Image (tube, rainbow, N blue to C red; front, side, top):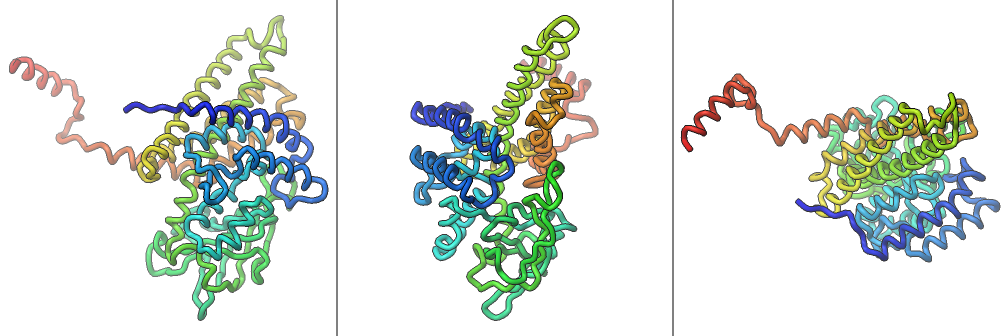
Length: 425
């Protein structure tokens, strides 16, 4: 089957503009305001950020993952992958382009499953880029395993009452609303017994037990919360989609997001490779450049080959999603790129960081956040082990067990078969 990743010249011009705009206009935000990408705008950041967002809108590139009816361009996954590859080199770029997680996934499911009233109340301000949202799914005792979720939502007249605890709810600290996944029917399977609810963050009963940061962040300054829902009462129209549809909605939300994560990592890896090559050409030791050392050359070659293989795999997966419009059909490859993402990021960033010596492990180079990102990518959107199991199960569906006591490629039997074939010619 032929496949083609080419895009029209008009889109290539857009990619060129995104590269220039990110490098010259957005990257300064990473250096001046490195920890404020997901904080509400203030007098200092507001004018700059709003002006940059408007330039993105003027180019028709704001929230490009959404359809035209919601202000996006309706780009397919292949084009979105190429855009995210460029944005991946900056922590601020996804915010400036309206593609930041978890807001992108939250916007997509509200657009697809929300009522008109929900779209007006929650989706519209989210798309305008003036607020943040939170996806509250995983739990302290369960991680991402829905079969172990205990957070309950119980009917009480026309209302629902939510009780339980959620862990690592990203952006809860600054979100205007949370999307909570809760068990509504404990007597059926987890895949049919959970529902999602849209809940304003200031609803009585929502208590932030503590805010967790990543391993490089100071205590209580992180953006991921441990939340207690203590009898949180919401009206019946807070239900997102139908009752019992939470698992299906979650899978819809995560499919494309995994491709976007992977391509942003491609961008980060390219940045690490660029730094590695520059260092190799700039630094001398033991009488010659690092670039002339064969072990350094081997690391450069391994990094280049690893990155190119991964990039093509991700692009092919995105292309398949566009072609078939069926995430289930592409599930095996989506899971494969998911568990490859942290491995590729880890390997390439480590080689580049190591080549920079003491400077590489210092806080004067950007490797710390990139290095942490490898560990993060191994657990977000489902741990790598789960995705390996998915790949293996889907792969095995295309095979059958050997019909007899010997493998089908057992040479004595194959030779006997070959002799009979030749005799009958």
